[in-house]
Length: 493
Image (cartoon, rainbow, N blue to C red; front, side, top):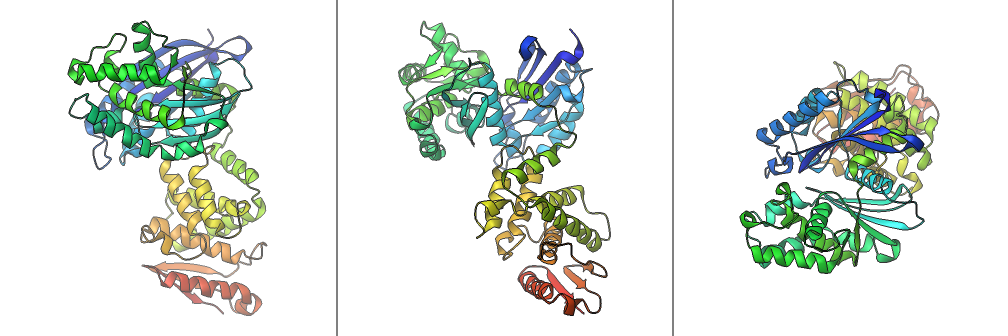
């Protein structure tokens, strides 16, 4: 078995961490070589302030160190490690990711809910026979639930909701009681959280439905052990398990044939979410699929040679999808970078530089939706685009810059006081104004300096007469900044 024929996926879920290693077989099939799973319960380590506890981080790091030993000798192109809802929520996720990446030996990506959904569908589709049908896929994880419609191996519609077996069990069954009151409260909350899905995923949009991953497999195992067909989940079978849980009455007494030890603490939350999904979407049958997130990661590694610059490829893809004027985007990016460099006595932070460059490339991405308020459309697109795998902090900063690159600044009142936001935003807004003719502006002699909260833009003699419209736009820009914690003083000559 040649090492180069192996691929590895690491899935950092809210309940369990998993490592799957597959071999590329004949006809580009992936055959499982090894599968490691550890119940880390990292989702239980989030407190009310969304801080991940030290104990939860240590459990995760210890697991990743063990996975890292197994992955010794693998190359970067053979491995992808993805983290999901718990680390999307944790405010101290960066600390965990940095140390975890060192222990694993490969970078950990905190992926968006939409990217998680796409990979789940890819994994499910890899386990199913070819079909023209449109497939609905439900994946109830530890802290998130993904709902996808796809055809063949491609996800067509994706959504991720912040509820799952771990979070719902901890919140609605914290007393351990398996009674009607707890279940009714949990199911009502799940229906409320999933209300949007009722209209976004009507029965007319899909032909057949599948369930994947933890809760689905736990339900299937329990049904099979009791002599029922666990390959297909129905409302009646869910009701059967629900009534069993009520009869048992408490998590500590929970002993259902087929239910694994690591699922007992979270099965009530998972079943309450599944019952809500089935009821809300009018699902009569859910076929249990074997594919999951990690298989989607493996097939992505197999199908796509990673570009030398993944972020540049993602930007380029969005520009093509939304008809962005690439030459103008590069023009604005160049001018904005120059202005940001001028206004700082020290080198800008890597996040500020990267976010500004990417936001400049995408600042007009919303124009294809509508010219009116296109900056708001652009912010929505950059926030929700599933093909972009940016880190959450970078995505948030890009969205802020795209949203704020034109119009009034009060929409960013909550963050405008932060220099890490304000300085790139100042650079981007000024670059957009100076490039308004969609030609390279004359930047010779233009300087931008910062003193405290004041910026001073100076032009060479004669500039104002040569570029009267540009001067007027800059004056309007100075007025906009006067209503913020910052000021822009113009010395136009």
